[in-house]
Image (cartoon, rainbow, N blue to C red; front, side):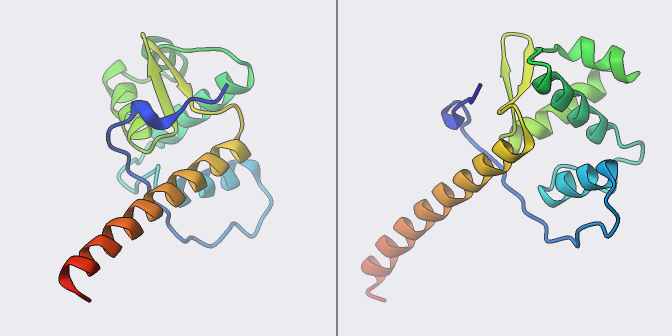
Length: 140
């Protein structure tokens, strides 16, 4: 299921150019993907945001919806920690919240990257439009 981004008022899109892992290892590649999207920070010492992301990914693959309480129980984290990371993932536009349910915006990683790419293109088009208007007003 694809969730439109219109429900988001503000979205933070971060792309970090990080060298791909040399070794073909799913865990390292998932870590690289999330880090490249600016989802995981160095401050997350216990990789709890990564773990929340993985659980949401598993739920999307199983077409199963989850609550923050379920995530907290599954991961052995406090609900507050889970909510903190979910909010960060929602800010990035990859997680949606409806009722008390959290899901990834799309069902697989390739679709997720496709959607992020569309979001970036929309943001760049908006920036270009405003820049053009400012240039015209400033006669640049």
